[in-house]
Structure formats: C-alpha cells, structure tokens
Length: 181
Length: 322
Image (cartoon, rainbow over all chains, first blue to last red; front, side, top):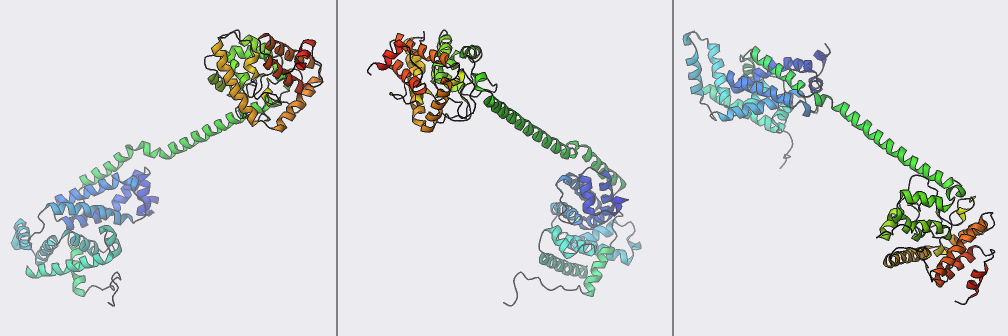
C-alpha cells in the first residue's frame, strides 16, 4: 500500500536498495504508457518488444547508479528513446509513405471492409513512421500528453527550443505526408 | 539585433489543426501492453538482479564494520602508546637507588639480554661512562668485542619498554641534552643512593665535566679489553667522536646540576664505595699505561668529589705535573 503512494523516484531507490516489490509497482505504472510510446515510435511489435525489454533491462542494470535528481519518467523515456532510435537507424532511413500505406492495406485481410477511420489511422501511422526518429519521438512524447516540453528536452538531452523546433518540423511534415496520401 | 540569441521564443499555442493532429496521434491504437511473457521475463530479471547483489546490500554493514575495525585499531594503538608512556614515566619515577643497584647485577642481566655488542658501545654514548661501569666493563670484555661498535651503539640507543635498572639512554634524550627527564641509570651517583628529584638524578657524562682534554672518551680507555688492538682502536675513535659531540652540545647548567648531584652522593653512606670504584678505574688506567687518561679521570673525579680525600698513590698522580 505504501509503495502504491510512493513517488517513482522513491520506488526506484527502494528497488536499488533491494525491494523487488518496488520495481513491480514501478513497472506496473509505466508498462502501458511506455509500450504504447515505443509501439508508435518503432511501428512494429517485434521492435517494440525488443526495445521495451531492453529498456527495462537497462533500468535494472543501472539501479545502483540511479540518482533521484531527474524525474524517473524522463530517465526511463530517455533510455527507451535511445534504444528505439538505434533500432530505427538500423532500418532504412526513410520509409516512403506510399509504400507503407500499400503494405498496411495489403496486410489487411479484407481491404474492402476497412473503415475510413482505419484508413486514416494507417495513413497517420505511415506518416509518423516517415519522420526522422528524434522528431518522431518528440511528437509522440508530446502527443501522449504526459510530458512537458522541459521533460522532453531532458529526455532528448537537448534544449527546450530545439524540442519546439523538432515538434514544429514534425507536424509540418505530417501534414504534407497526409495531404500527399 | 533586437532579439537575444539565447532568449526562448514565446510559447506558441498549437493551432486547432495541430491540436487535432496531436489528438489523433494520441488516439492511435497501440498494443494494449507488452505480452504477458514479456512482463514476466522483465519482473523475473528484476528479482534475479537483486539476488546477484548480496554484497551491495551488505555495503552499509561492511562500511560500518570497517569503521568499527578502524576505530578499534586506532584505540588499541593509542592504548599501547599510552601504556608505553606510562611505563616510561614509571621508570623515571622509580627511585634511582632501585634503578641503579649494583652495576654488576644489571650488567649481567643486560649481558644476557642485549648481548655484548650493545654493552660494549653503550658507555661510549654521551650518557657518560663512569667508574661505576668498571665491573660491567670487566664482565663485558670477557666476551668477544663487536665488529661494528657504532652499529651496536645505535641499537643500544633504542628505548626499551621494560624499566630495566641500568637501562640505556632514552630515545628522546638527545646527545646534547642530557638534562632530559629520562634518567641515566648508569650514572655514577645513582649507584649508591636514591636521587630525590628528577633534575638531580641524571648524572653528567664525564665528557661534560670540565676536563682538561676535550672528550677524553674514557669509556674505551677505561676498559681493559681483551679484544684485538684494532677493535679497541675502532671503539676508541667512536667514543672520541661521540664524546666530542656531546661535549660540544653540553650546557653549563647541565654541568652544574651533575656536579651538585655528585656532591650529594659523596655525602651519602655509599659514597665511599663509589669513590673506590673511581679509584680502581683510575688505577686501571695507570696499569694500562694510560697516565693521561688516568689524570683526566682523576680530574673528573675531583670536580665531582672535591672533598673526598684521595689515596696516597693517586694523590701523587694528582700532584704530578701535566
């Protein structure tokens, strides 16, 4: 019960001190959000699973070095983003939106039954996947509505102005992509 | 020009279109969460990691144990040091009579423990070879002399924890400052009677006495050593060097104090026996063909025992022209 009310930082320190339940509580708090973020960032489940697991393994390994100077969320997302961007960079640098849409539609068992909304979602996904990784990550972090510009700046280890710029570029590119498709 | 380079741009509210786009992104369906197997694997890894770090969990206790050990060790050292100091001060406060009861007895003890090398060189130290050492010397010289007298001297200068009656000069007593609180158990007056106060107790080394010759080094000369002549010469030169050094560092005040203590000894019941030892040593010098050393020794004796009558044979020596 105590652990449910504890801050993320206190839980992480408790885990570093040997409390396994503290980690379980922390994991429960972030598993859904982080997985969703990674899923949208990476675009496919295999990469998402891989990055998600690696992120938590890094957290576990770094528990003794953790200092509660920065919010735990920022630290967690920074690890996740680095790993995700590494994965994304190993892929083709840019994915053609049309290709993605074609692939997504082709994967549907019955394209005729797809709703317009679903098509829009797929188009949006494809457009997001076309963004450079840093812009994509910044956009997803803001779109999730849980992190402020300052926190995103902490995660990406850049200035606040850089984050604003990345977000602006990301939105503009999304618009262009969506209009094209 | 009007805009500062690092000044943050004013916060721009996202346009309705941008907001709609961001909301659409947020509403994008994502997987409900990681697969159950992934959850279990991560949680298992977290528990496993804790099992691997028993040492890390014990770190505070290890630190505490280390601190306790250090404190214990330091306390032990301090206790040992204070015990040593108290033993030393106890030794100082022991009456001189007890400390310097017959030299022969103490010398026998030292012969057994310290070895002949240290004994051989100790009287050459600035701590004053006096006639009281005659029996000691006689015993010592029955044994082979050390090859390196200076080394033995150095070793003999080291302090000993046990309050030996005829202990060596204390480590902290510099050669040029014999008036230190550390007693010189081999000092002549201490042989016979207790010295009431500490400053009076340490006798002056013979080299500090107003001798006509600088640093006569009677220690080596006084002893009829059966050792080879070369060794004797070595010891003598060492003694000369040490005697000269102590004579150079001696102060007038120290001489005075030593003289006072010797005069006091002269008036005590055992003074006669002490004087006899002086006489015997002087005679020994004469027998060894060392009249100058005998005279120097006699001069020292006279400076310390101005009122003690000399035997006839030594009286002639005293009256003889130099």
